[in-house]
Image (cartoon, rainbow, N blue to C red; front, side, top):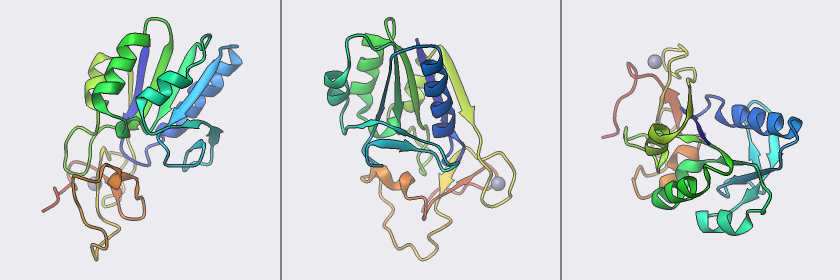
Length: 182
Ligand SMILES: [Zn+2]
């Protein structure tokens, strides 16, 4: 089974992933947690939860770290993994393992971020979380925009997939407030 937890930055994706991990452990499941190496050996929610994780830069390394009796796998910041590799991994294991994927589904250019949108369409269960819009303060934000970097101290380029993770520069916004980068 495949579940996708997605939405804007700061919407609580990692918090919900943490709940899924915690619930699976309460049910006595064998759980493995993976994440792109943004944080050191853990997943971190801005709400205040963190959890140990195996941080690896590729799906191949997730595959090789899988334990034979694992029942639930959680993957955080999944938008940063190779799109095709992640899709193949999910197709291969979803009938035997409960796979829960969390990540941002849209980049600041209003494009699919990594494989997230594709995986949303192929999952049994999808949760889309909304954040509070930085501009209008409504809980309707689904995309990110550079509001916190008015001096443009970092270049905005599609070659840097990790731009969304620089939370000191990007903020969640709603569709009314969103303006594509120029
Ligand atoms: Zn707004």
